[in-house]
Amino acid sequence: MKCEELLKALNDYVDGHVDPAVCEEFESHLAGCNPCQVVVDNIRNTIELYRSGVPYEMPPEFHDRLRQRLKSKWTKVFGARKE
Image (cartoon, rainbow, N blue to C red; front, side, top):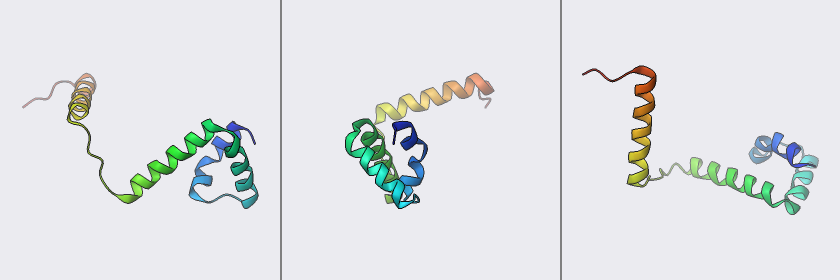
C-alpha cells in the first residue's frame, strides 16, 4: 500500500469501517511509514478530543488575534457594522 492509497481510505480506517484485509495493509504500511503514522495519530487525537466534549481554552492572545482577523474579514466582505 502506498501513502496515497492510505490517505484515500483514511476516514473509513479511523472509523473502523474497513475490510479486515485492508486493515492489515494499513497496519503494515503504518509500521514502516512515520509520516502516515503522524497523520493517523493526529486524526485519532482530534476525534478523541471532539468526543470527550471538553472545551479547549484558547490562550487570550490567540483569542484576540482570531477575533480581530474575523472582524477584519467580515468588514472586508460585508462592510462596517452600523449601530
